[in-house]
Structure formats: structure tokens, C-alpha cells
Image (cartoon, rainbow, N blue to C red; front, side, top):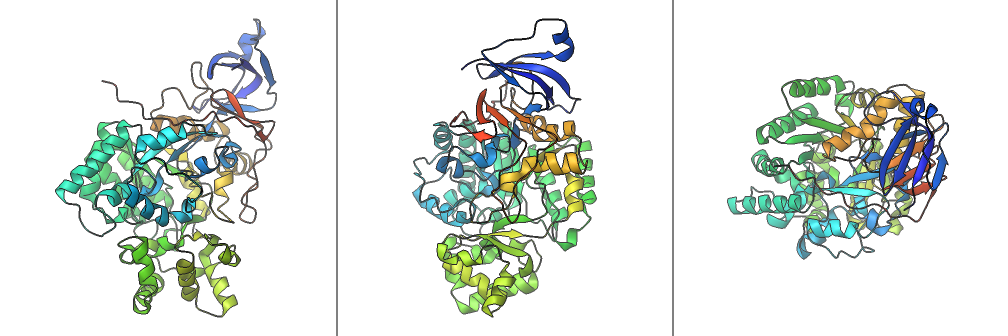
Length: 538
């Protein structure tokens, strides 16, 4: 690996401090020297085998995506241009309580079916792992960006308890604790939950607290998709804060939004709740994406009772007329827990992807629009999609509020997470645009964040949450995971109409000191590896 000097860069180092001009020398995958302009004026400037003129560009640490759904995408397409082109050099996988390790053959089939809308069915992936460690080893074969992993609590529950709505027995709880400990020992950085997804939602707080105590003992963190982002959202946040307090566990709140009409303008209430807990000594961070629309699967909207037993049972209930009518009633009139207690508005539910090509005509339209074209009720259309697509349908939900998005991203414990689902014909633009969207729209155009503060939100702060001792800052001795961008032009190219358009203004991205993006183009470098949990020092 040849030495590189990045000449005359405006360094924004990830701490939030003011930028400075410097030459930065990279060698052996690390930052070996930083020579500031003042020092350079009085001494010989550093030389290297290769020089890069960074005049007019900002050099920052690589961005850390604290909430990614690239669990299969990285294996299917290790080049991973969707994230590398954004300046992402590390993603955190295993989100929302459902992923592909630890599993056995039986559990793997159910997990694959339940999150096909997130990641596709995986027919093009060789599932040659079962444990967390084996999955991380698979990543180590070569990927464009680094990846860390959260143990998915729903997957652990499916493996031990199954997909039924019941309490775990003492023996089952012991086995789940053991699996969490094993995953952490094998390198996972913490535990995730999806408490509006089956089977994770069937776990009571006592069970979750016991698992979080294991996480705390290893120095990891708990990352819950909590029980409501609509009706009862504030109560659900408070529930997680209290659970983490009882367990003595660090808490990272996933995609910490306040959505639906019931929460318009209520972000300050959430931030006040967090400030009170932080003042009392809690260790809390959160992530958000800089968009108002959410993204999930169509099946996720169903009431939890309809999802008990797993994907096969869901399909059976949907094809039974009487049971299907009960589901419709909960969705449209009561407000199902899967839809966060809010009666579904089919005009806000846009189909973003389908598993079956025969259903492509639905993509890009709301359920209400498709139903009108077919002359049927929205529930009839939604039900048909669920059954014919075998639960693989992905959706956007246009239920967010700009003022909430802006208020939360200003908070001192905020980090960036794309929650990017790469599957589907018309995915959410956040999968391809989150990080340049922060820098372009919310720094340059609207001034919601300063450049230095925003970079800290996307680099140094998440690295601290992940307990990474040598990443997330531009500092001598640190890993050379770096991004060079033009602050005058950086922007998300992706939009709701053209979600896979690459960003602009990010010409260079380095992972482990090697260019994965060079002159704005993806190289063939696969320098990323699994980033394993840093052991707790004795």
C-alpha cells in the first residue's frame, strides 16, 4: 500500500471543533501525519509516493451509518456503491431485531420470509453461516465498507421460543442470555429489538431487561425499535429509557422520529424526556434520517395477533375471510399496534418494492391510488398484495413532520442513520442519499447544523457509541477511513421519483487508506471488514 499525502485539505476532524487547513499523510491504512498550514509554512511539507490536491475540499472522517439494512446487500454486491458513494465507511447491521444470525436451519427460513421486504428473499445468497461469528467471518472475505453487527433479539427469540405470543420459560430465557453472550463474545457490538415486529414484540420488559444486563456486562449497547412511533410514542420512548436504566445498559434509540398526525410538533417533548434522563446520568444516543417519510414492509402494519406463529400463519389468516375482516377492522378502524396505534391512511402508504415481478404495476402508487384504478377498496388491494407477494412488499409511509426532523437532528446526542432498505424497484431515497442530504440540505442550504457539528454527528459521536478507539476522527494513528467532499456542491442526487441517483460533490472516499471512490467513481477495492466489539478492559 503506497503512502499518500492529501494536500491543502480543509480538515473537519469529527470533534465539532473549527476546521483547519492541513496536509494529511496516510500510510499503512492509518493517518501517520497531520501538518497544519501554519506549521507547513515554516518547514518542509510532507512528501509521499502519491499526492492528492484537495484544494477546496473538506477532509473528514468517513461517515458511520448507525442504522443500516445492508445485511444481505453487502454479500450480494460487495462493491456497495449505494453507501460508498455517500462517504459511508462503516455501517451497523442487525437492526430492528431481525437479521440472519444466530440461526438454525428452521429459524433461517422464517427470518428470510419475514424480512424479504427489507432484503429480498436471499435466493442469490449462499447462507453458509449460522452463528454471529460466522456471519462476521463471511463479511471479512471482502466488502467495500466496514460493518458492525447488533444481535437481533427477535431472531434470538425465534430460535429459542419460536414465533408464538407467550412468555419465555426460565430455561428459554437462560438460553437466550447465552446466545446474546456468545454473539457479543464473537464480536457483536450490542443488541437490537423490533418491538412492533414479530416475534420480538412478544417479549415483555422483564425479558428484555435480562438480555440487556448481559449486553451491559460486555460493554455493548441496546438499540430498540420501540413499541410505538405514533399513538403512545412518548410513553414508548420513556419505557426504553427506564428499561435501560434498570439494566444498567447504554441505550441508542433507533430512527428516533415522532410521526403521524398525533405527534406533529411534539419533538421538544421527546427531547425534554431525553435531557432529563441524561442529566440523571443515563448513557443515551439516537439516530435519525433526514427525511419525513418512513419505510417498512406492508406486513408490518398488521396487528400483532395476526402475525403470531410466523409468515405461514399470517398468510393463512389473510386467506380466511372472517379473519381477514378482523384484520381490516383493526387496521382501518381501531389502529393496529403494527401501525403504531393509528388507523391506517392508505393514501400515505406507497408501494416501493415487490418480490414478484408480476406486481410491478403497484410500485410508485399509494394503496389508495391502486385501489381506485381497480375499482375496489384499499383493503382488498392491500390484502391481494400481501398474499400474492408472499409478504415481500415494501412500503413508504408519508407520515413525518419536517419540524420534528429538524428539532431532533440538532440534539447533542444525535447521530445519522439511513435506515436504508436497498430492496425494491423504488426504494426510499434515504438509502442512497442520507449523508449528502445532511451536508447539502441541512448544512449548506438551511443552516440547521454547522458543518463542523454535522460532521461530528456523523463520525466522532457514532464512533464513541460503538467504542471504536481508532475511528471516527481525523487524528494521527487513527484508521484512514476518510471522505473528501466539496461543501459547495455536495448533495443527495436521490429523490422519491429517482431514488437510486448517486450523490454529487463526493469525489473521494477511502477505507483503510485505499480509495473505494476515486474521482467520483467506484473502484474495485474491497477494503472493508467486520468491525468487532472492543473488549471491556479489565
